Length: 153
Image 1 (cartoon, helix red, strand yellow):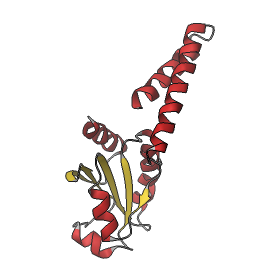
Image 2 (cartoon, helix red, strand yellow; image 1 turned 135 degrees about the vertical axis):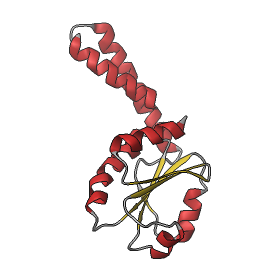
Image 3 (spheres, helix red, strand yellow; image 1 turned 90 degrees about the vertical axis):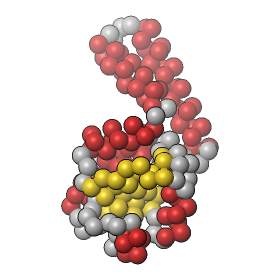
């Protein structure tokens, strides 16, 4: 799906640079159609492009054990850095539909935050096929996205 997104971006750029080129226009439409079809396939498989809330230890254990890449955003509603990174995580959730994104409010799930040794927010943890592969505290947007891309390969 990411490749179709990249193709659409590239063709949109070419369309602006070459507004009269019918081949570019046709290719852009084909790429948009393929991207839309792929997106609908993911939705039919249960991928919903929304960050899911984890509010219990059981839900966390189930989410961690999912196949593929899962990103957990441990946050506090009072923390400014959490407020700043949350919209970007929502964007990543849409941009990478093969990745499952979860948010955990540490104020509401103190036991879970303690079990996961969360000492500072925002903390992001990435799991792949049930195994923790990366933990980050206050990552930059670029570093977070690059890390997600790395574990998708």
